[in-house]
Length: 175
Image 1 (tube, rainbow, N blue to C red):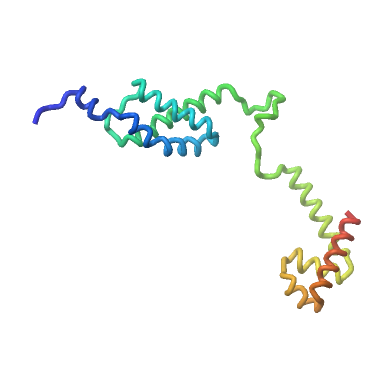
Image 2: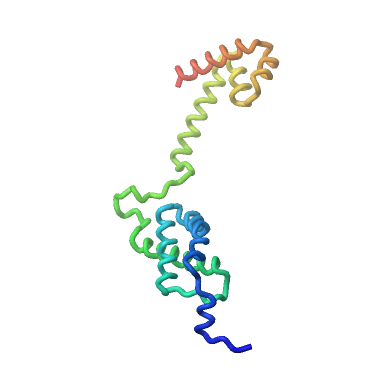
């Protein structure tokens, strides 16, 4: 056996364009999951391939090609985030609401408003005549089936729907 030179080792671990393209779908999915922007993900994967093909990144064979490509992509994502962090501010000093981050949870004032509205609705239901109140409480608040409510109140299904309609109409009028 003869010793391999560094140039022979580099040639034996060189990746072809076909090798790179085989990993493209995985890389794009990886970037999309992290960036939540399909076009930006495509751009970064293109940048990874450009870096590899131009020689700025060279595969030494110390890991699997996919792992190496993901590492390059991860660095590109970090670079992008750092670059954008320098330009976008979350301080709210400017009047530009376009960059405001949406929040899935209601604001405290919205929660208070919802509680007040719920309290008014519950008080309105409690103030209904007994037949309408019982139908609303069992069917709407306790979420019993129509059949169960009809059996408990000893009424027909048609009568239940009439009672619920009347109760809602009274609640809306009082609202």
